[in-house]
Image (tube, rainbow, N blue to C red; front, side):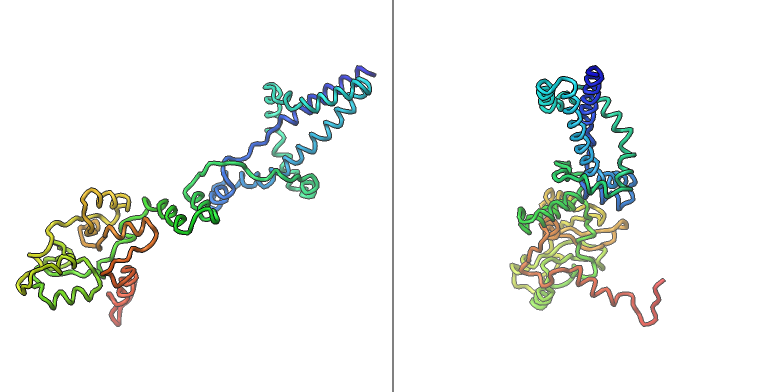
Length: 338
């Protein structure tokens, strides 16, 4: 009888060690990232998200089963070794069984067994949610520290950081995350609101007054039309001109003109501004037609996430002005859009 009791004690002790060695692994991605990928149709993320929803109950069930087996081990120890030695053996088991579970052969057996039974156990928990509620333990939720897996997740962390970051700091970080993905076309001043000056225009008092009333501070100088920009005028420079009615835009303009394609990124544009030490580029499309203008101010506003007010600028957002003005473009009474 004692031999059977000792054998039962050993079997229960091994079972306890194997259960203790079972370590269901959590996904290395946060719940936000799993939900994001799942919403994009990623089936692997959908499966992992479903597993994560049941994993806490699985861990709780493991803890409950571990406690029950430990009780059985104590009873078997008393039956096998008597009251005194049985209690001593039980205390020793309670103190050291987790270390015994860390032995590599035990861990290997536990890992293979867990891989085999986990789908069935998760299915059981899913179909019997009352069992999960009954055995659920607190303190098991959460995934611990998980690496940030996407820009979207980092943006989510910034937005949900509470008072750790100020509103300006959040805006700066988020705009920095998207800065390299934005194109010149997304922030440029469209050609529809670009005020130009013909190279033959005389820069007399009336012309200076008209330019000042536009609310703009920079003016491309054109030769015929806006697709032929030959220079640049800045209103600050015009204020220092001599009082001569015969001064033309061609004589006063800066002849260097820098062009940038509308498909280039803002990261490229900023590097170009730094390299050329120029503050305004003419934006062109793939056919070298003028699409608009881009200033260093535009790029810095996109990076900082807030407007930099120019003392000469009347309009805060020229793209809004262009959109409003565009309603009258190519829109005769009998127009038909196809």
